[in-house]
Length: 456
Image (cartoon, rainbow, N blue to C red; front, side, top):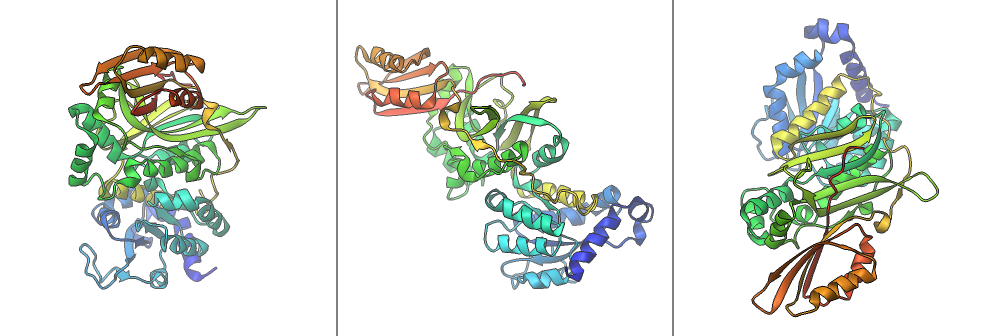
């Protein structure tokens, strides 16, 4: 192992010693920090560490000094960097030569970031990252390299920005059994659905508004199709249930097919539509557990804790034993918010033993449950011919699959078609699919209804 790695762990070990770090902080050398990336998040983190230097010193007994910043174009001038103190480089070797004690990654993307982090971890340098796609897709590899080198890998900022859900699951609830996670994990879609609910706005109009305000990217696919939320769920579920979760294990459906009518119908039914990321431990045949994972828009009863989470806010509900239920919410995106989570992880590394949290949290393997493992109620909207007998035909098709109708709403349309809305009693999703295949309709939207359950 090289000298920089040994120095990093020795310095951080000293930081955890009360006499050296708190009684005589003026004699303790500063913690050397390097940043990967200096955009919205990286720049916000740099400013936070400079402007809140005293807070860090009071919390840890150590000062923090940003020694190096790696960017893709080192020739471009960047505000907020004192080049007399901080090296700006596009070379990882030059960054490592400054002997950082901790590296904070805010570059994003998979390549070359993955190789950068693997190199740093191999050298025994603790890494703090905000990169959800990297952790979701390559977490097992990163954890293995961190454990082999005895280097901490922390990733609070990769999910829900300022909401400390990763630390809660990985540390505070480490000795508990978690049964279910429900989350609003994407601020863009929550802003859009909240606005559609408040103003009756259609999807295309509210998407354009979200893009103009900077909530949605010019290409919004990752947000509106649920891909961003699926990556975050795979990270959280892996920690909560102690199992390796691939993003491909998450059944994902976005919100682009929803209409203002769906939002209005949900209101009549006493619900609001939310894009819900859900992980749940289910009983497996023959004993043991398996894991159900999905991201999908759902009708959420207005009395549910997640129903009134509005705007770009994120929220996570956790059910388990023996604690019952916990709900946390807060800002789920933004430069300063994500930077605060990175800074929190940095401070945690400074105040802990070098070997703390180096192990892969995925200690077991749970089978992924098939789609029909969970029977639930559904909302169904159909555009059907406005003629006698249609409702009876729909009811008959459902009855043939032993699906019972709970509630029916019907609206006349001007073009000879009627909008038929119904909710079902609990049924298997594939049975509902099969029943609806035989119903003549121009359009059909099916959404699950979230049950208003008591804590487990």
